[in-house]
Image (tube, rainbow, N blue to C red; front, side):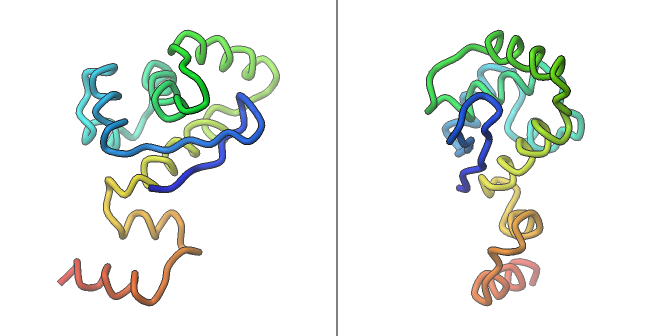
Length: 124
């Protein structure tokens, strides 16, 4: 599980997901973890609920709080794809729920010779 720097709502903040958090997200969205991680398009409802779960260690806030903050950020010039969706995609990959290959595709700087051997072994 990788912590992804995400400081849109406060300095020093980061997001992460693990199995328990994916279960919580499933309860909030009605979508399985598989549906969430394979969803190519993240709508605002999913984004706000994802942020609610992945940032909860920085204080419990509801999806409406994030919706209001995102609205203010958009008015200031925030790019939803670059500033929110890409970090969410990295957070999903960082959870390793998509497998080690996807993790190292997103974070190639962390590839080690041992990890490369594991990925090759998975393919065979």
